[in-house]
Length: 237
Ligand SMILES: C[S@@+](CC[C@H](N)C(=O)[O-])C[C@H]1O[C@@H](n2cnc3c(N)ncnc32)[C@H](O)[C@@H]1O
Image (tube, rainbow, N blue to C red; front, top):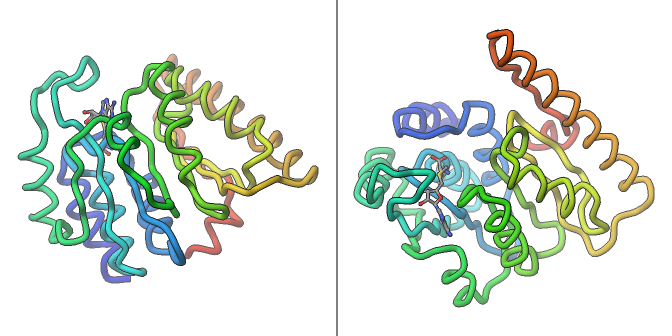
């Protein structure tokens, strides 16, 4: 696909923390996103993840990316307002035409957002309180067979606890996978016993890789790159 290389070139030029495998996952999720529903991103910062999503969507159904971020300085991102750079990076990547920026907090944006969601990527405030709130605000808006993806679910306490409690142990998700620190899953009305067992199995793997990667950090070894949920990912290739 033409835009995958393009996406990589421009996304990796934008400052950010998303790894290349995580970006490729977002690109593929957006490219395969079809049917009813919007693509939403919580926490865009300077646009790295937004570029991956927009480029994927461009190679797919050309759905707009609703990119929600107040772009004000926060304890996590104290470098000041990021909106100007966000726009510049998206325009340089020729991806701004598929992006609808919403310069608001997740809480304020959710109050006004009345549509169905087909794909949501959550990478906003990582405190447990806010990560949990983001899940509770946006989960009801995601349609069945829609995808929820969460960044920093390996080592960061807030998103990690939220996915463990509300995704892996939930009756409403199946096909859970992870790529580096992103956990993603398909929403369903009610998962089967077999799917619940599979979800617990993936959680065990995720915890195992988290322990390995923590040990690697301690011993100064390179960070592991792990992808689980390969069957699902393969469908997207
Ligand atoms: C880690 S950065 C996002 C990085 C981005 N996804 C990327 O790949 O480069 C976190 C972002 O979340 C935003 N944020 C913080 N609190 C938020 C909230 N309540 N609602 C929406 N976004 C929020 C911050 O402004 C910041 O830009």
